[in-house]
Amino acid sequence: MRALPLCLLALMLTGCSLHKSPAPVKSRPLFSQPGSPVHSKPAPRPPQVAIYTDAADLVSKPFRDLGEVSGEDCQSSTQDSPANINTARKRMQIRASTMKANAVLLHKCEIVTTTSGCYRQAVCQGSALKTTK
Image (cartoon, rainbow, N blue to C red; front, side):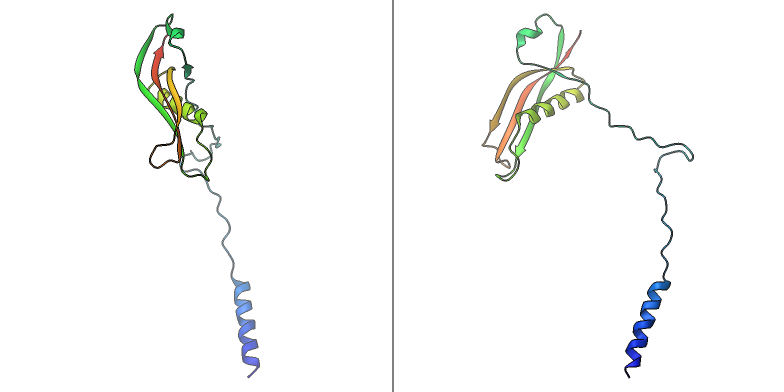
């Protein structure tokens, strides 16, 4: 009777050793041509958007106002990283670049604590401008 469990154990161990896994398949990009080398490009950077803090700097430059833009950075709870004005300003620049603007006239940046859903929120507001050089 002792031989039966030993035989079953030996049978299970040999069954696992006979199992072969398939050879790993090399993955290829979905949209590349066969035989062409694959080069990864970095993501395109948005165009540079200048920030003007004083409207007097725009007196000598012709420009067109494209509309209001804003950027926010939210601190959800006290354990999260604090709301950052630089992040809010950068997000405002990115939104202006999607409007094909190359400059922003900054109206104000502030930290707000009365926003629902955020413990603290950094908000920057400005006007997106298309200036000619």
